[in-house]
Each structure stands twice: as C-alpha cells, then as structure tokens.
Image (cartoon, rainbow, N blue to C red; front, side, top):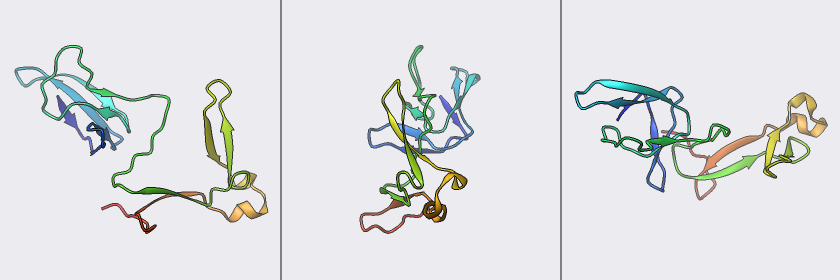
Length: 134
C-alpha cells in the first residue's frame, strides 16, 4: 500500500482518518509497480499503514458516502456558539430514519434577533479556551 497526498490523524480506536481532500491510496505489487489507485475521501478510515503488505480481499479503508464528517486535527471539546433553535438553526428530522440534524438558517430567512447571530462550531480546551491548529 502506498498513500499519496494523504494527511491523517490517529483515531483513539487505532485507525487513521484522512483529513485531506485529494488523497489517494495505491496498490503496489511485489516488483514495486503501482497496479491500482483509488481516491480517499475526506473522513475515510484507513485501516492499514503506509507501506503495509495486504492480502487479496483485505479492506484497507472504509467510509460512509452519505455523510459529511467534521474531523479535528487536535483533541478538545466542541462548543456551539450562537446555535439558537428556531432563531439561527432549525432542527430537521428525517422521516425515514428518525435521525435529527441541526441546519443553520440562511441569514435572509431569520427574524430580527437572528440576523446578528453567527452560528459557529469552536474547538476548546478543558478551560474553555479556543484551540488553534498548529
């Protein structure tokens, strides 16, 4: 296996998570020739190390094509700022799956008080201080 243009972070469960948008994974044969190459989407879970030998049929990565994950490169806590249901965000429930999500309302669709809100997801440390990426 050869990873091309892939930036990763280590998940606590032990696998790697792709945090680059243009990464690819290549299959190299015993003679060092690349035989196949596949795109790795953002958020893909990579189950093998770069340079690892793999067996036929072995899964080397997995992802859900129906979700759009948000992956952080540093550990911390998520803080939602200006998320006010019915004012800046709306709760939407999928009738088939029952899964609910929060959708940020367009500024034009908000009422007076909501127009000044800027819904933001922040990453903070245990003291509430905003974390910056290295």
